[in-house]
Image (cartoon, rainbow, N blue to C red):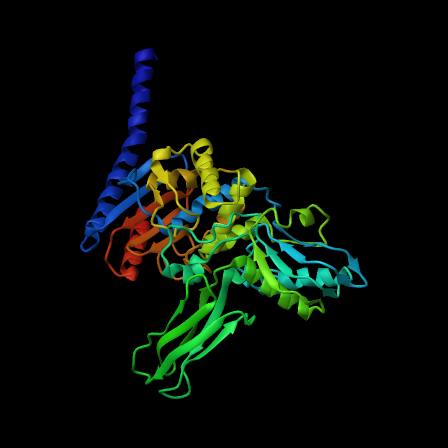
Length: 493
């Protein structure tokens, strides 16, 4: 066969391979465009990209425009932690004394020094909650720390109990978060110490009869929150309007509004000083373990104040769960506070300080230098996505997800992603569709924003990688989620 015939045969083969893919891409585009252009969804801004693991784009719509991604932002901080931190990495929390221990008495202050461990909380770290060790209570690690102090022979402390959070900076509240959000678990202030997601559980229910105040309980109740109950129980058919408020920067909280008979729930109210909250909880754990503290409970973010004590050997140290367990709640149940703690930790370990600024610089370095994403394709403000200052293109998310799919440290990242129909934020989605159990993706939702980015497992070949972000919509959330799911079902056909 001469060279001309060989070239012709090669051309015919390429055409034969290309045409089916081109036709399928056209059919996919028609199906997806029909969904996105259907009223009332056509009034919103949609950004969509679908690729395979080789990076071939199967569909794109506004893929290079910047969108507010909501909690899809968490894909960045968890990817950075997966790549930069060793798999066996654990965060240590240490206790130091400022004086000698004589006859079971520490003559000085007892200083608990945090390094950003968010796992002093009640949580499960896997979808199978029956596995031994998968779940912990809020007191599990605190009691271990207190028990270790008692095991050192310390029975009393004649100084103060200090929560030292100076490993991170002293900016606890993110400047881009709304003031009301700072009252709730999803906007909890971020410091190097923290317990119970830096929130107190507020369980409320109707009183015994109309006219009575609602019944409200706190857990853990450390005696530090001053709660004023201004609520009123109303008939079962009336509206429930209860809400909680706080004097800014204080522990003075009040509840107001109505609770209908038969109604009740538990909410999670953030506290303003995580270091002080941890110190109070640790004091309770010490007392329960037979260690009395006679001085006050205080907190500091001054790195110099207790430096001399930190230069001595720690009395005791406890460690967090390993890296992949810390990532799990960030992706699986979209835990904001874990994401922000991890972001500051990355800034401390790989930047110049434990701050949002330093952590975001680490993320930018990973996205540009390692993943190869153009710096104009993203602008990040926090780790969780609560801030509307986050802007990311769908194509950037697609590139990040493709990078993580082929990365050697992908296992913890993939394990943490919610799977459709299973425990996590995709538990009730894609049920009864061909994609039940086959979608691994991160959800996202704030006002006028919904997003979903991840992988669709195919019966043949590698997964499809997708990112769907909708901004500036006024459609009820359930309808938007259903439409996003319809888009994903169609792209997988």
